[in-house]
Length: 125
Image (cartoon, rainbow, N blue to C red; front, top):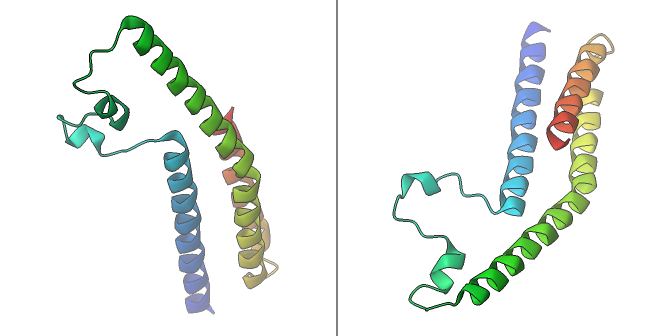
């Protein structure tokens, strides 16, 4: 029984990491983040490389920046619209995991899932 509980705990922990990793990758992709840019001090953002060597006027730079801002707004809206799907996938996996647990284990699991949801909601606000 004790070994089974440890195995279930390990599986739940692994599933949490997988779901968290997938959500993190989706957010990273949505926001255009590259966590390892700081390692390459010579890295030039792709948008800047598009115009390298071109003598842009101030008006051109301003218009390009406006276009970039609109693109960022559109991408944020796109991913914001996907969050319900991501949450549904997470909820389905939590429900499946919950079914593996004994009735005695479920209340603790439910509290932990609720805590995770509260943190995610707080991060979005």
